[in-house]
Amino acid sequence: MNLEKIDTSYWLVKDQAWMTERKGQWETIEPRLKNGMNKAQRAISIIKRYFLKGAVPDFEALSDWKSDFRHLDLLCFIWLHPSKDKRVLKALRDAYIHSPLVDESDVWLGIGGFLRGGEIDASIEFKKGKKDTSGWRKYTGENEMLFDILIGDLSVPVYPENGGACWSIDKFRAPFDILFPMGQMLCNQSLNYINEDCLFQYDNYLEYWYLSCPQDEDYFSLNKLNQHQYPYFEQALYRIHHFDTEKEGDTCRSRFVHKMRKMLDEREFISEFKQMWLDVKLDKVEVKNPWKR
Image (cartoon, rainbow, N blue to C red; front, side, top):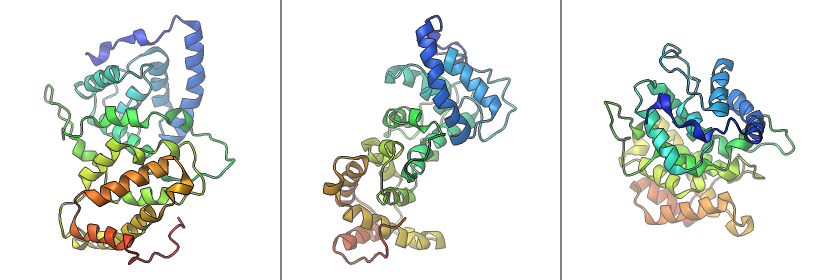
């Protein structure tokens, strides 16, 4: 598939009802691009043309535009396509990442922005009654599908090479210490629609996190930063072990906790981390104010 000639039949531009609905959807998406993704107005205009009509920007003409918040990055390209068919979207992903017109930053900004939204942002607690101006509501409900498309097959460390382009997923391997926001979410007094679609609850994401776990037995003594993290790992594991899933019921948090406990019990980890988990389960670890963020 040629990125400059994608199939635009998914955009029913001659269907007045479809276009009216699409324009209504844009009203919830634009704040997300502006407030959540910090897209420039120039970028938002480019993305809007794609969202409403399937117009792919002139990547070559925009090649000199160096910005951390460029226009139609990989996430926007996939997320804002009218189809939700995985086969269609995976073919589009491949066309995008293998196009010689696409800047490398367009790929990494899309993947990085998506992961940040499903990890760090999805662990945050927001005040009740606060009016949503971020456009997040439109973004939620699709994280599992988007993860499978953007990250791809976990057994393959790189996207398939094609014409010299080879994108390494290892560049965005989930950090070991993402365990901290996992634990923080368990302290939220209430759940919001962002929490409810957190990546932590999904099997493929947890497998992705596990693949990032260190293999070096000296991990915690390698440097001062790792040493400093030690009590935060204890805190996160304490919360995972003691979280009351029965009281919680079937939510994103209880699903995450059940899966993570099983992983911590059954998978191999470096000795010091594994012992930390065993000590938590034996109540040998004391954490002050464990449920305070």
